[in-house]
Length: 251
Image (cartoon, rainbow, N blue to C red; front, side, top):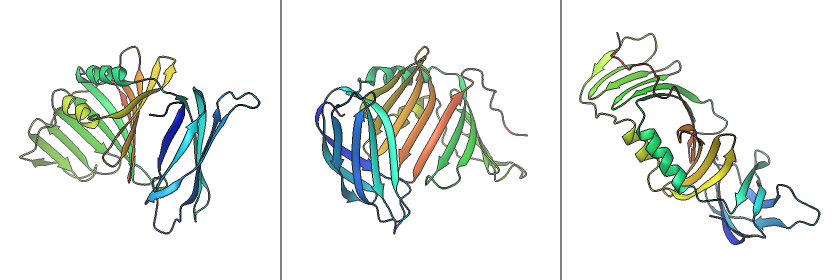
């Protein structure tokens, strides 16, 4: 995790297509509230693979930094800006509290948006979970699936008839879901805190994959999960904790 002093910078660009010709990547930064003459961050980044750039920079001092990554491509300029505290406080304890809180749930709703590239239309899925292993997934305008223990039902569209599926591996919710998603986190940091919410960021080295969680600080429960990886741009919103409807076999 970045701290004042020399740091390594790694950037992954999502939704890259052959022929995009990514080049001239740079990192720049200044304090979010920058007085005249305040130190800045500047570094050129070198290619390290398809959609990957890396480099070295120096963070002059601690504080909230407005960081910007910019590059050029054959489709036009690309840039992203975010404000992060450097050094960011450790978020391991809050992440552990969040996982423990989610493990105690009896039910929940989840709305998911998934796309493989930023400019593609998302696949929208509405899900209902009941502990310890009942789940219903409904893709907007597409297939649906119900899992209750080892029993399963599926249909290909909202107008199709349900069909029975056998030999299903039970989905153990919430335990299997949250321990699986958040296994082996790297660089767990608290990125923002206030208004009853906290934002936790971390990575998993395979992929790599980046997570950004918005957590209710009063209950420790997850509100929003954002996951970014190559060909995988996912946002999940959780609601109806312990008040979601019962998952039942379809008619």
